[in-house]
Length: 432
Image (cartoon, rainbow, N blue to C red; front, side, top):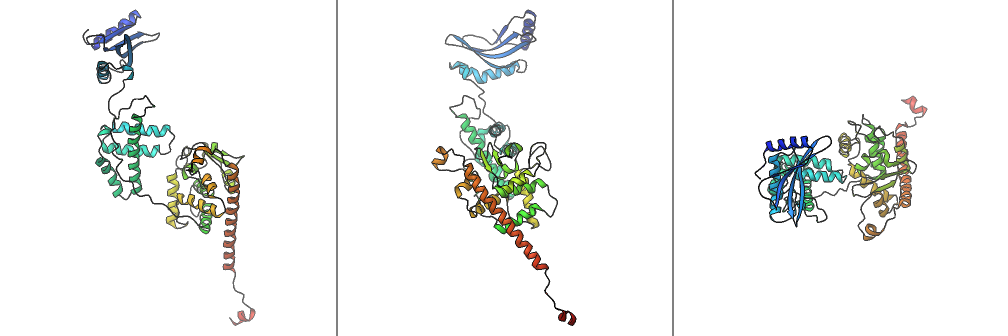
């Protein structure tokens, strides 16, 4: 049979509509191995036309759907059949195993990686999407991902580094490397039958060195802790109240900035005074009893209509971002009204002062949800340590209240001493 034409397809559709009988049209000459077929079926309310790859194998006829007509045109159906099925049929392999054989583009790789992060509920997916979109525009969105060379990745990162954005440059390098790494693993995962189109041979970002990490050492001593806490209670300038409350909760609990910033009413158990996260940065659930001083602060806050304790000042449907809290603190530092401190320093401060309060490092690690690497903790110990955490937070609460009270009393005493005038007797006054 000669090749199909668009006119023959249209006539066949009218015939099936008139006769209500199924009809199959084959494209091209020959039979016995495999061909492109258009299967037209009458349905109660419409006529369907589906492109199928057809193969005779081991005495049985196999079919696999390519697409629907007219969404997939005749010329497009031929292209897909030739590209993905013809060679497999000639080699005697089953068309059931066939898939799109085109290698993936840069844009496709990055979009698929971001979708993977999103499906895994990774909080970094938005930042990854934003940065990888810019990288794709620079490298060429429609170029094959496997054709990208290390030098091209370096050329993307270098201008960011030269602008003084060293941390950002390292983040972009990390996202590119992770996207390629995910692409390679997804293609070679024997546990999955899904077809990938990247055909990556190596990771072009794998050999690019990372920016040396600067390990922070800054933490607030008791006097600085109180100074910051008091300013957050009564700031000297107009600020969005949820921001000051969020930072105080950070100081009182030692948790990660992102997890406190996104605190939702569903995560707060008022009766037990527990914050419960179903999933955290290390992928594990985490729950902590909060000290009384923090519980009282949380209970004084009315969550907004969307359930956020610390909503964004610009969009009430979203919580404040950790970046916004960082900027907020940075502005106060520049004004010199608070100690020089970052939000990460507050986590380090809690770890240090809680140790000073007499809480063991093991319990401090568990309260802060640090991953414990010993075999016992990773593989065997399933105790939630809630009683131990409660005892620790009770001790920490006493320490904080004593610190705040002590420093406040000292401050008042200094003010009182400053205001007292030296005694002057009558004779001295008369002489004056």
